[in-house]
Length: 563
Image (tube, rainbow, N blue to C red; front, side):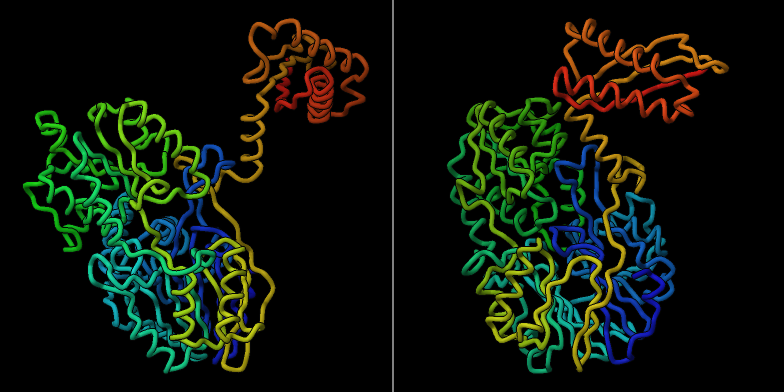
């Protein structure tokens, strides 16, 4: 199904929804609702690269399905300010223009920092929306409602459409004792259930976990227990967007007479934004700068930093390797990793923990202490959501494919008809109305890779070559041939990187060059046809030689020059 087919009119009392990211994966959330030829976008996030994406900095959703529909977009609404929900917005607006963006105050505050980095601030219209406030984006009316999550100002969406009421939870949990005393608005969810929910879209991340997700206050209690026992400096690494977590670190530091040093670019920016908006309270006399740290006794110092996922050049990784210019650990210091081990990062985080211990530090982390709790609802909370809203149709969102399947199964146990609990993947359009639902042919979706300043210029072929290089090394075969007669003027000469040890190269590569020479004696340029066929034969010859001799498969790059 092409983007032009999206223009095909729907019944005026029906809504088409499809995701361009965020289904069957963690991150890159982008959902689209279409009604009466108008498009409402919900979130636009990125994904951090997986292990096989060598050299890639960020991963964005492919939005080519929206090509030519810029004028049909009535708005972009945001549920919260995590990177997997707002991180791709600068790239989206460069391709689709500048739709008005709606979100809660902190969400837009964090987005402003991001737009400023891309020189887009001032070119985008943003409107703040408070919980229980509605905005009219015809034919949609969108009401924001409060949800608890691992970031301040999280919101769910109640979207009234000509087809009926659609409820989107965003990322949420039902925390009855949140740090800011702003729990998930169960009263509004119950009211939506009374009004009649046509379709529920709900966070699936923790559907495999029984029971209830622990309250964020549990982490604050852990800080209050650990920090008074620390004799040296304390370093706490967490996500820079987790303002509740940062507030609890600050409270524990102040209660124990410690001064606070904020380290890491995103941590400094997000804390400044949260303080300015009144979401984070830090006494001015508790904050210090790097130059003041040297004169402070270790037992009076607490550092809040980024790098909890073991990112190679993050502040925490450099501190762990004793490679940070200003901050060093000494025996007796304590490090608290207050974040989840995100799948795929376990090895990097374990390496950082090992190096922290080598520095003589004591380390607390998720597997040993309650210094992290999830921001996502577990099974009993998801059941409560179903009981309150009583949806006619249900589509699980925000999770890997198994999470979506498990969540659909849970919804069926709560009374949703089996055929009404629908598991979608990215690009699967679903049309819903009061009269029923139907699937449509899949749209084009995918991933766009960001490498440095290049967006989309690296694809799967390039990633495959990078993987081949990383795993097997490179062999370059240089040949110089006569332009008129094709005779060999120079070579073949072979150069390698990451293939065989230097001391073993000479004889072995001479044998490989002889194999290429023998092939050239058998095939003249006239029989091969052109240079590309010659390159193909060189690759085949070397591939066979290396496979027989050493059972290795390097990337082979023939370089043929003519004189």
